[in-house]
Length: 302
Image 1 (tube, one colour):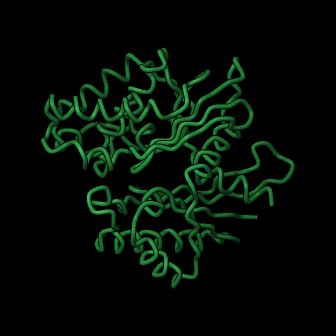
Image 2 (image 1 turned 120 degrees about the vertical axis):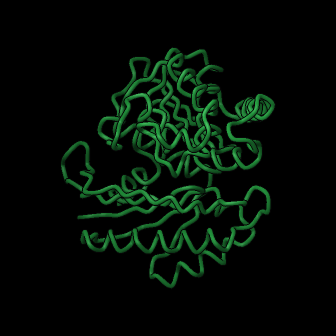
């Protein structure tokens, strides 16, 4: 059976198409993984509403993702939405327009997002020697941190993400010292509301994979190289400090950085860095998986 999952987030609309291989581990054999970046959460933190332009961009992006899934002969397509659709006053405006495509999008809770993210890591990365791991999923509008062993045991979702924090704190290009200080204080306050990190820390989603791609100097993104890469916290500090000193235009020239993330990457990367430093970790593991993988794992259970 061939399954497809669309994950509609604050910044991205991602499609994973995978075959379910019976009697095999791993059960999911990826066919294709497509990224669109329509930024549904544009101005959401300021207005509490989805911007009409963002709605139009995201509907078009999801329409393209659906067409890709169908062209690859997916037997079933499932779509989920996260923080922007949880938070926006006018989410129904977007959802009703999307229904006309024939695909029903399910808005998942922060708890569901955390559970699905954790499962995607458990199913793909080797079990840590301590038996304990923490998974941080940094999105455009929220950050989830999940702690557990084979299954999640404690988790929380906080309304801080790359797009939300960039729009709230960064006005200059590059950021001023005062803006970085305000950003840092907000992240530290948010991290206090999340569970304490236990065991190794695995980082998911575009912010983390971009930091890994920068670390590897990838001219073209390759999830196979990124998945499971381990980055020293000291090295992350150097990479992210450098990002904060560059203009958006200068960041766009860096190998490993998608220009569509160039403006918001600094705010998102600071969440990852400060989480690792707060926990006193020597390094962080990056995963190329995420909610879309967890969705298909659960669908394959069915």
